[in-house]
Length: 63
Image 1 (cartoon, one colour):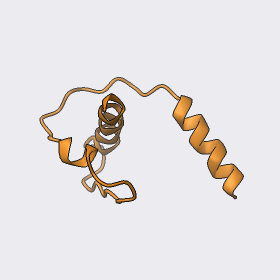
Image 2: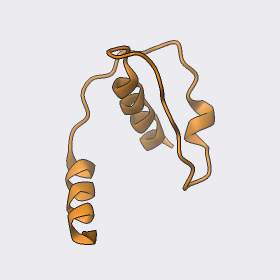
Image 3: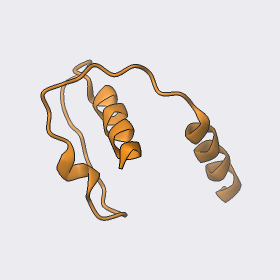
Image 4: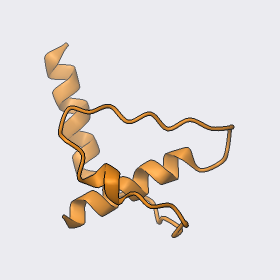
């Protein structure tokens, strides 16, 4: 099981993220969170939760 998780994570790391549209959401607090914290993003279907997560990943790579 550990090997499967490692494979998935390594494939994800090399994957290119889709283009993200800038939103009026402040994600700075989440970028500087302690490692190991769980962030839950809730909302209606098709409202941009996945792209918000992509945006958070892109911002965290800049730090």
